[in-house]
Amino acid sequence: MTEGIDQETYKRLASERITNTSIGLFDQLTIISQRAINGQLAHMWRKPDSPLRKIDIRPYGDEAPDYFFDANLSAPTVNLSLGPNKQTVVFCLNVKVGLGPVTEEIGPSRLALRVNMAFDQLAKSDVPQNIKDALINVDDYTADLIPKVNGIDKNESDFTISKDAEKWFYPLLEYYLATLREKGPDGKPAEHNIINYTATAKNPKVFTAAPTCAPTNLNFQNLPFVLKESDKLSPDAVLGGKNSMLVYLQMTEGRKFPFDLLQASANWVMPPFDETSEQYDGTVCLSKASFLDGFLLPRLAHINQESTWVVDEAWWKAIDGGFKNQYQVYGHLGLNYKDLQDPFFQDYQWKLTSQQNGVRTYEYHRTHKKDDNHGLWRVWQEGRTSNTLTIPEGLDSSSKCVMKLSGTTAIQTYLHLDGIGEIGKTTSLVTCTWEASLILDGVDQGELKITAETPKEPIIRTVED
Picture 1 (tube, rainbow, N blue to C red):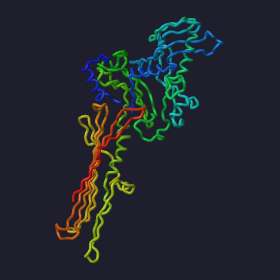
Picture 2 (cartoon, rainbow, N blue to C red; picture 1 turned 45 degrees about the vertical axis):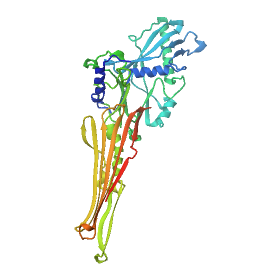
Picture 3 (spheres, rainbow, N blue to C red; picture 1 turned 60 degrees about the vertical axis):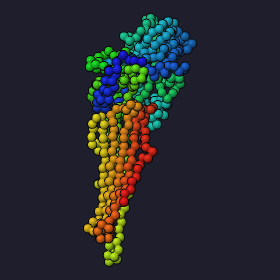
């Protein structure tokens, strides 16, 4: 299975997908290829009771027996418009055979509907129950119906009907579209509607941080699949349009939309070169501010908080006229509430230390020491924590993004209490070393999958006296 590109072009596009794509000024993008959309429509069409298989509209029954529209359908398809119409989709009903009003016979044909990817905002009472269930608390959202059908696209249609039947036909078509809004692929109200809905958050403060959250602003556009520079502005799709992209543009936390739509740079989707090569029909892209700075790094900072050694006490004093020594030396692992009131411990976030060869390296270092030094009589303890996080750009050979975490916490204690030189000294060093991996492994039902892997012995302890 090839898509009309050679191996050299495939390698170039695969590299550009990581290095040359740009999220622009948006917070989140969801990108889907035209091929994936049509594949999903075909999957829905295969269900025996799907309303995508057959049109059967008789709004007035026996009272108006000639006012009907019956048709057997092939799977519907969409074409993503490019150039100046890049916020328009052409939705095609592919008729095998049918009968229309005033017994108009309809042969194999294509009825193309021009769809504006804009929103019809719904009143709360008009939101379908399955959408309300998904939103949990519908009062926190504004629900919008998409798409908005603007009418027949005669340039894209291959469909003829007599003038006598035409005035009856288009209202009947609206009845059918209403059916698609109300029913799922099995012909019943379902979890997924054929004509779908979006939700934007009224108040971003109702959400805890997450890799993706309901946007507070949402828009759509199409992007061309680019093989050469001139493809970026051309209204004509390359490779039959299968790889043209529908892009959900999203802003979060109440931020305003950029003035301009996203500009074509490189391709977010990838057709296969051959039967063994990778194919990407969809991409979810989060900005650095949303994902790294807003979600991942703050949560992984908890590792730094929990692996920091705090020295509680390290002191000695002479008692009983100097004939005895009393001392305390101990600490605890992990920053507690009291520790975090101390400015010394308040910053336990990751710091970017390098960015080269497609890898970001973040580090955390903290050393805490208490030293009661009276010359020959001395007690001290020191905790040293050093953690490292590496985040690669792109995917590995298994199509995963593997982030590496590692760290070392060392606690060194020194005691010299008798004042008679080297004989009375003692030192101990306890070191704990750990490592783990975090794996970004695609998106499942809209949720970003992050899994953790640890070796059989994730923590190694060593003790030196």
